[in-house]
Length: 194
Length: 194
DNA sequence: ATATTAAACTAATGCTATTAGTTTTTGTTT
DNA sequence: AAACAAAAACTAATAGCATTAGTTTAATAT
Image (cartoon, rainbow over all chains, first blue to last red):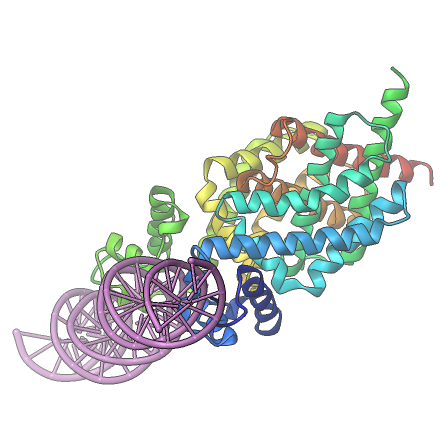
């Protein structure tokens, strides 16, 4: 029954291509329809509405980040894996800044999609944290801390929120990871003294 | 010359009131004009455009957060001041979540306003960091780390990005601050050994 | 061949920010 | 007090947005 080989997945493909080509700002259902050579209204045969589509795009981007992280930590362990993961995350955001802004935009409206998109990115982090001798609940906490730090850093960095002082962004990011590493090792030590 | 006592400041006042009453989502120039009892087009006698207005609102919110932080750290020093500041920041975001979302939205478009809004919030943080014996450039780095962590945490928390695991948000936040405190104290120690 | 149905279409709605041009009001100057 | 200048309101229009209802097309299944 499909006149073109159109599906939700191919629509998301096109959307991501569009965002990377024209920028997050230029993205709209009109523009997406033009790219797919259909009329805007026809999109509603495949998607619920804009919010759902955005969520699906965000989920896809989450998956891309997850894969990038997995590739980065492959064969590594301990602090090396930690640093590799954090660097990979930031590099992805820098190289696909318009895609990352989709995730930024989603966070304004709390919905199930945001939860799902974030869920994608948790797995590699938990894998990295498994190298540290901490409890299961500690792992849940540190996973949050890592994600908060990485996301907060990137949003500030790319919005100009860090421009006020003349010190290198790379160095700050490195210090932040170092700090988390220190915290993790301290937690390990405390368990040894119990 | 003003027919009503309208100015850029009173418009921002009304905008903030509107956002707190109706939510960030319902905010528009139409709604703002209705509240001020003028026609939407008349707003352009006072503002450049939507982006500039949003920036001005963000700047104002930045000032509110700054004041909240200053109040929170008054009379405190060291780690007590650090914890008080971080708690005040998060509490403000929770109690004025729709205002905080304005800042979240601004970060998608890099502009001078974002830089200015963030600039407002730096002062109290630098004040807190002055209690630690670290170098000037270290202070610049730690200021960024603190802001990244706080902002990243709040965006995730309020968007549902932390829902995956059954551990308390408060505890995670506390651990994050503790970690930064540990990092600061470690930096102090390293200077003593030089 | 016929019936079914997904997926396209057209057309319209009501929202958004924004611009141009006009009128009203107010404060200043003659 | 009368005239002028300018700020700030207005009306009217535009182009874009997401979205809905109703209709037609085209491909598949019977």
